[in-house]
Length: 165
Image 1 (cartoon, rainbow, N blue to C red):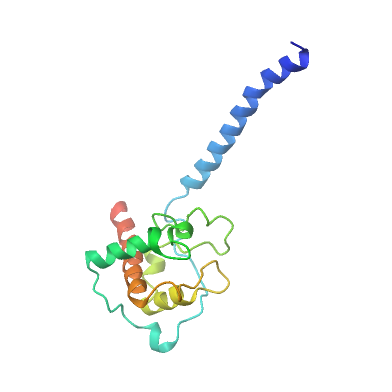
Image 2: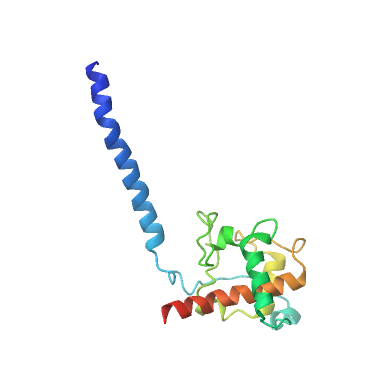
C-alpha cells in the first residue's frame, strides 16, 4: 500500500466524524429553538374585506370538525398539505419552511393566532398571502374544509399552552 493510500485511509474516518458532528450540530440548533421563539410573530398581512373580517366560524368545534381539519393540515389539503410549511406541530418549522421570508406562521403561539379573527384566517387560506409563501387554496378547499382547518389551527395554540402548564 502506498503512502498516499495509507494517508487517505487515516483521513476518511476523521472526515466522516466531522460531517456527522456538523449535521448533529445543525440539528441541535434547529430543534433547540423553543416552540415560543418568534412568538408573537408580527405580520402586515392584508386585511380581509370588512364583511368577512369579523365573521365567526359557523361550524361548531366538534371533535369531528377538528379531526377533519387535522387531516387537511397533515395530508389532505392540496396542492400542498399545511404541515409541509407550518410543521407537523404547527410551529412554523415544516420541511419547506427553510428559506421562506417571512417564515410560516407559528400556530402554536396563542399570542399570535388568538388575535386573528376567524374571518381573516378564512380569507388568508382562500386567497393566500402576497409577499409570503402562503398559497391560495381557493380552488382546492371548499368553505366547510377551510372552517374545519381553522378549528384545528386554533387547537394547536391551545395544545401548546396545555403542554407548558
